[in-house]
Image (cartoon, helix red, strand yellow):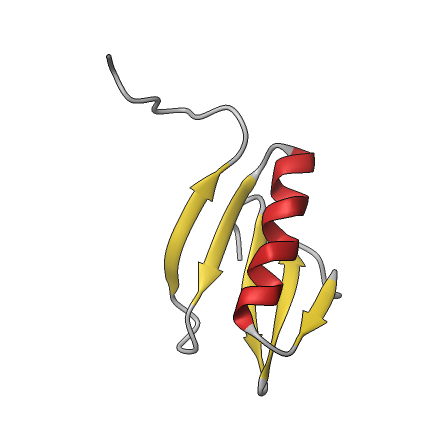
Length: 74
């Protein structure tokens, strides 16, 4: 996980929220939805990005809550 921000990753049958580069989870939750809710809150507070991984470990969704390096035009 080299991308800065909060990552929601599978952890056995549960889901964990990890800050990029951290070795310990910020929290572990029974459902992905609960983990996403907590990670979104942390990303907003820290003005970083949120990466939601699927069961296969690949990033399936990404949201930015900080300064967007590529804002939409118009």
